[in-house]
Image 1 (tube, rainbow, N blue to C red):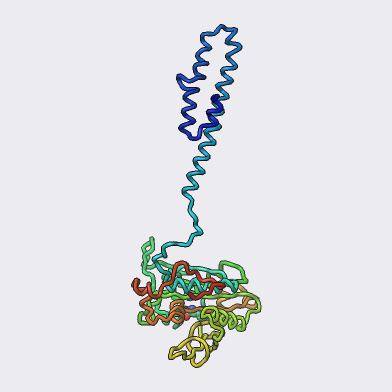
Image 2: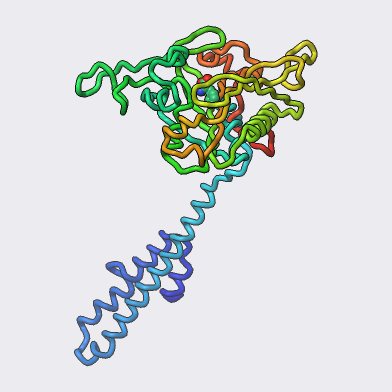
Length: 360
Ligand code: PHE
């Protein structure tokens, strides 16, 4: 076999290296030819020299080319053994579970996203202006006391005894998600359609109140918005959330400083096999606060209330979860008891979708 045939026939990198040593190594065939140049007459060297050098070149190039081929084949073989088929079903079920609050937040996001709402966020340590003043709750307003506010008593770098917000008042742990309405209106131009889910804080604790809980806020700002839009949106949302078409709602006149008029939304319930379930209208329970955004609030955000109107709503996410999935003690939500989580938690693979059903 010629050297070039041997190179082509080498099936592995070590085989190829053996051919290389036999040709170009210290006592290799081509090395011997090169050495023979020394003993030649100048005339003979002028004839044979270029031939021998060309031969060495040819063999060197063939070895390099074969080496590249063999390396590529070796890599392919390795990749083939390391292949992982990510489309295979999981053999072991994931061990953790999704907390009902996270599950319900995902459900709410899915439902409102389908109606064209984006998700907005704001800080949990909020300043007094965004949490109260801009929402038409002035300093002397009794609603401030109603909210059982936590004040943040952090010292500033300058040594003041509280962390002052923009308007020189102590910072608060936000008592509701409504300040996100303000931040959104200040931060983007209408039309606006957002929901703002998140943690809120009030100094309160019993079976249905915890110092930290979750709310979701909704805000729509556009031209020609009426309470009809508000009612349709909330009815559509509640039907999708509870996955029942027989949901009946009732708007009950109410009061919030930042909406005018304001309405509490009651959902009808009925008795089914001795249990109270949503749907029908044998009785009523309150599920949402809502109303038309107060013109003072729209003005505080630099918009002209003659041009822009809108509605807002807010509700407790934990309470929605309790109603839908039947837990009775809110405090258990935040105990971190694994037995409770195992019972009420959701599978990590069970992502709520409108097509697959938002309920698990
Ligand atoms: N922020 C109110 C609360 O915490 C709920 C609400 C939001 C009411 C938006 C009306 C409009 O009780």
